[in-house]
Length: 171
Image (cartoon, rainbow, N blue to C red; front, side, top):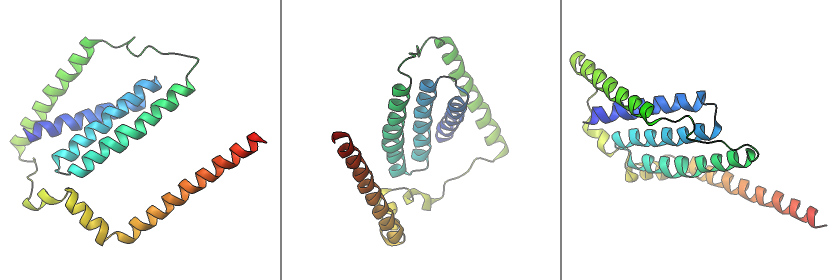
């Protein structure tokens, strides 16, 4: 079952990445990017990296892609696009059926040739919150603190620039 899920998420990530690059509609491309980020989070879950999967969904799929969509919608105010003008449920059903058949064929070939990987016992605790926190606050404490200081300085600089622009408009 894990192999089927891996093949599903991997093919979904590959397909949505191709859609992001080849799609002519910017809104549809951003929506494909959302599904790509969700499929990457699914791959993280299969690797038992729960913290990375949650961060992937919250930060990338949740915040950054929503920001992209807002910018795209603000830049394309004069021309509205119909998202489902060219969308056909038959094509979507055929696409997912093809992915399922391809996943089964790849799994059959992988099990027949013996190239499917086995998970080691040490990999169970690698992606947990405790393991990441332990590494972050022991081995990588200095880079973590430097990054926090740089981000704080960037926020303070952005606020100062915004206040300067507001003061110049008021005068």
